[in-house]
Amino acid sequence: MVRRLLIRLLCAVFAVIAAGWSIAAELGGDPLRAPGIADDTVVAAVGDEEITVGQFRREMAVRGGGLPAQFATAEQRRALLDEMIRYRATVARARAEGYDTDPEVIAIFERAMVGKFQNDHLVAPRESLDVTDEEVAAYYAEHRAAYDRPERSRAAIVFFKSNALATEEIQQKLEERVQQALEETEALDPSIMHFGPVARKYSDDRASRYVGGVIGWLIKFPNRQYKWEAPVVNAVFSLSEPGQMAPPIRTEKGIYLVRLVDRETASPRPFEQVKNGIFHQLMRSKGEQLDQALRADVLAGIDVDVNQEIFSGIEAPASAAETVEEQRPPQLPAG
Image 1 (cartoon, helix red, strand yellow):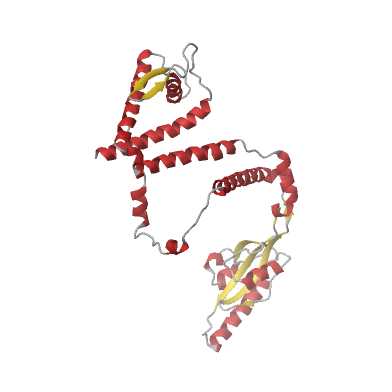
Image 2 (tube, helix red, strand yellow):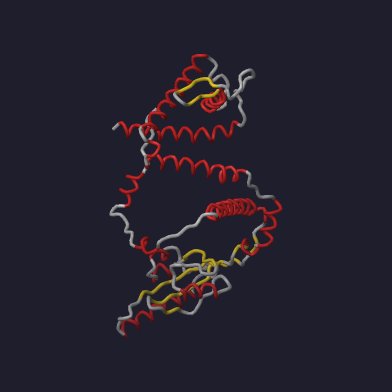
């Protein structure tokens, strides 16, 4: 029980240290340093260890968050010194009992160390990254086509569902319904570009039958996927004038009537509309390059040899969630 409490305490200590790294980096220098007492002067001895004036000043800076008058009274400063003494005494006691070689403690230390390493080599450099207006403009000029609005067509359909096992008589009746729908479409008011009441009367596509058969905009873009069968999509893009119809399309699912409702040709997007997106895209790209460079640098001077045969024989745990929970570091004590 005592061992577990000490490990929890160490978790809290490492969390405070990690937070201190960040705060100290933001403060920079020694804002609470006063003339007269050198930083290397010993203010307290705890066993074989010493607490120097510089360490104490740094702790005040970290704890105070850079705000003035956080340790203005002697009582506040002494309370902090007593806390630092208790901390050093706890470290000495834990080390004496072998906690510095405990695998769990070592793992906590390594995570804190890696966190500091990544902060110094990734977080800080990321803050200095920038993308100039010239870079954004150059990227837009080089990739101009990628920022064009693609051609798109707004279509309407009437769908007649069929069955491959349908008898010849049923299929004949279906063809007659298709012909009737075509005739009624031709009789629609010329201002109606979709199928209007024809879709409501004949279509088996419930999503579009009550809106004139309109299925929305289809974008002419490579490898774009739609729920509609390829012959239907191809027919939509083969039409050029609103109101124009394609010949009936027969597939394994049924028969389609396709009509073009509206069409927009490809058009360039102005630089002002896309420059912010390009800026953030280039910033992400530079950040990823920084990450990749660090990964490569970390592995560059280290020999790595994976025993593939052993690795292939490792089985996943019965419950990955339970294993992750067991390996998760203990929560920090409530403070």
